Length: 162
Image (cartoon, rainbow, N blue to C red; front, side, top):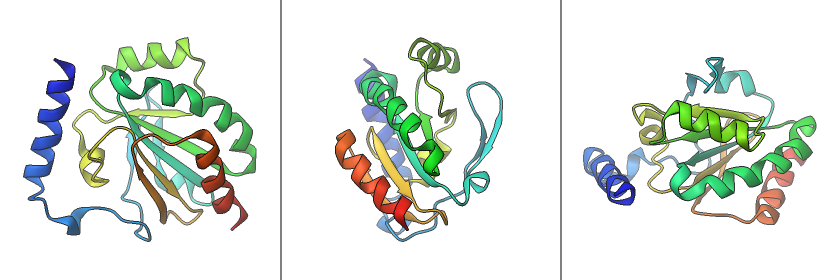
């Protein structure tokens, strides 16, 4: 049932955007603004993260929970080097996401996209959708689907060197 809902929601997003690829964010584009409260009520803005390499990770617990858990050791390894993570959850309740974060000792920033506005702004059409931003907020990588931690490490280290 959840998968059916997910497919219907994604179909609605595609239809409402008119399938016009001009809306889709691409590598080389400035990342669309993010200004939202995290799951604990703390205000988060993408502008606050200028100067850092940022991973934006769109996910839903039903399909990507394992991938989100894998981000924690990665985050701990690279946060002092100037990397940050914004994990943006779709479709799960804030209470459920906060419990998941607590149960898995997740310390990076987790946002709820209550009305799927960020999902539309970033034209994320599946889960996970992963974007890597350089220190200036430019999208350098957009990955639709899972990625190995080794590949993610390679892509992030490339941006950290710049």
